[in-house]
Image 1 (cartoon, one colour):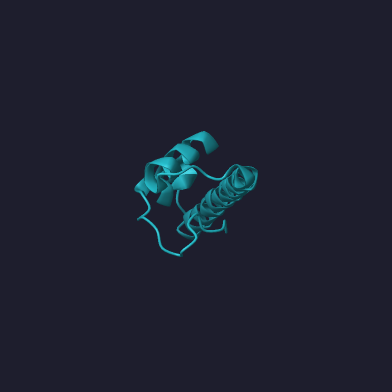
Image 2: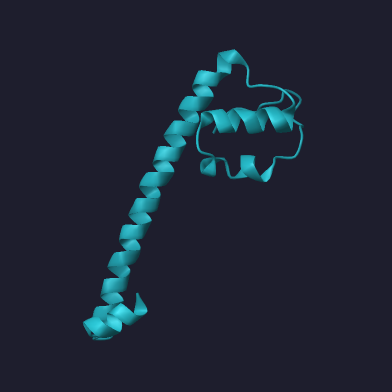
Length: 94
């Protein structure tokens, strides 16, 4: 987890965009939202670390999402087999 952006432990409420930072298109959009909410930019000395953190966590979430999608497809196949569904019936469900 990235370190806090404020030093006193208290700060402004996070915007929806910051709460859902993984949906922002890139680090520049993240920085822009930080500037808007905190009225300050990410310190230059921390930018590289924060960009690395976002890149790493976004890649991990993408990987986990793909795993989840694959697991759901496998579960669906098992359920279809358990109920002896025909390909036509399976097509209706999907």
